[in-house]
Structure formats: C-alpha cells, structure tokens
Amino acid sequence: MFSLLSTVLLLSLSARSLAAPALLQSRAIAQPLFDQLNLFEQFSAAAYCPGNNDSPNSKLTCAAGNCPLVEAADTETLAEFQNSLVTDVTGYVAVDHTNSHVVVGFRGSSSLRNYIADLDFPLVPADICAGCLVHDGFWNSWLEARDGVMKAIMSIDDSYPDYSLVVTGHSLGAAIATIAAAQLRNEGHPAALYTYGSPRVGQLTFAEYVTNQPGGNYRVTHTQDPVPRLPPIAIAGYSHTSPEYFISSPNDVTPTPNDITQFDGINELNGNAGQLGLDVSDHGWYFNAIGACADFELFK
Image 1 (cartoon, rainbow, N blue to C red):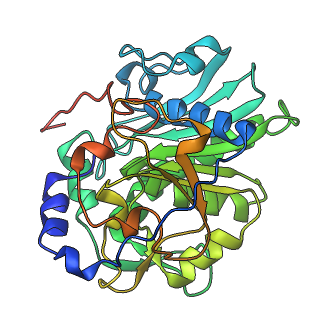
Image 2 (image 1 turned 90 degrees about the vertical axis):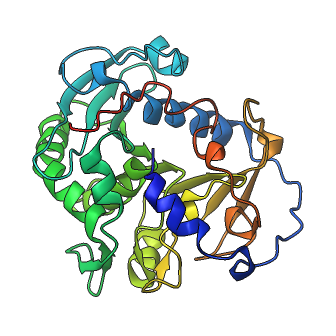
C-alpha cells in the first residue's frame, strides 16, 4: 500500500483545491472489458502474495483467497523478483495458458524501502521519450527490475507468439507498471497496461506519450481513494494518463459494469479527482481486497 506519510501530505492539501465533483453520467462499460479489468486486478493482487515473488516456475496462488480467477487459470511464473538493493521492487513475470496472456505484475508498497521510494518525489529524466520526466522513486524501482523483466520477456517471445502481453499493478506497483509498459512498447512489445489506484507517475509530456502509445491503457480508480491524487498536480506538473475507469461502488461490494464509468482526457476532473472527500480504505478495495496478501516488513 502507499505510504501513510504520503497520505498525510495529501491531507495537508485543502479539499478546496480540488474541482467540484461532476455529475456522473451512468454509463456501464461493456461486459468483456469489465471481465478484463476484474481479471487483471486479481493478477495485481497476486503480486502482494510472498509465494509468488520467490519461487520461479510455480503456479500463481493467493493465500488470502482474493485471486480466484488467477488460481483457476493454468499459470506459471517465468521470473520472480524481490528484495532489490535500493527500492525492494517486487513482482513476477508469468504465463497464463488459460487466457493466453503473458503477465508482468508489480507489488504495491510492503516494506520500508518501498515507502522511501514512494516519497522520492523529484522528477528525473527517463529514456522513455524526449523530454519525459518521471518520479525518481518510481523510476529507480523500474531500473532495478528492468533487466530481469526484459530478459524474461525476450526469452519467451518465440514460445508464445499468440499470447498478449499485459503489465499490471496496484499503488506503487501501478506506477512501476506504467513505466514498464512504456519501455516495453518502445522495445517493440505492444503491452496492455492495467493499473489500480495508481499515483501520478510523471509530468505532462510523459502522460501524453504513454496515453498515445499502442497497446491500450486501463487506469482504474475507486471513489475517494487518495493515492491517485498524489503527487499533486501543483508539484512540478505531475499528470495522469488517459483514460480513467472510475469505480463508484462502495467498499466491500463487488462492482458491476454499471458501477464503472470511463472518463477521457489528461488530468480530467470528473472521476476520482472530482471527489471532495478522501478515504484511505478506498485504496485497499477495488474488485476485492486487493492487498489482502500483503506482508509488511519494516526492516526488509
């Protein structure tokens, strides 16, 4: 999960600085899209489960019972990573033979080093595009995972030519996934990007570049989740990618297609950003309790 210190920073910003909430037009998304959003939320949930980060060539499982669709599929991890030197970036590269996907999943914050990365706000140049600036902590997290992820993807290109590549994550994991997808696309891998509760990752040039890349972007937010409002736009022009898929149903309720509205546009203010309230618990519930497997280790 995202740092409590980050939440405190957000709470220090007056709700008056946010746009007034727009009246949402009830517009159900299509069932096939809903099914994909639900499936990859569970792949993001699986990244929190310790057993999926330290035992390559094994099936993805969730001890908390929050990824039944993933557990029902014929999956195998090809690479797992954790406990990197600086940022403790954690996740896996897996093959889903049931649904014909190669999935790269990144875990959200679960250690002190993760939280330090969360708070490393300064923007730094990234070799994603000309003029791209991204969050220093997120960028360093990706750099520590990049070689292993790229090697795993390149090693299976010829083995599963008909499988689609998907990059996914929640919270910190969503931010790293955004950078990873952009880099993979640049390297000729048309990755689809599914993120849940993602903070802003970079400035406007980066957000526009990722938005316009082929592959598909699915940035999911939930009611008054405070993390998608971090870092604030006022800090160096941090911007979100488009589109946003906004879940309006409450916690502890499984959403339906009628509960999800699509909003288009960089930094649009009709979805999560248009909600005046803040509720940290909304960050932990998307299609289910997404971080239920999290095993926080302060000194890890």
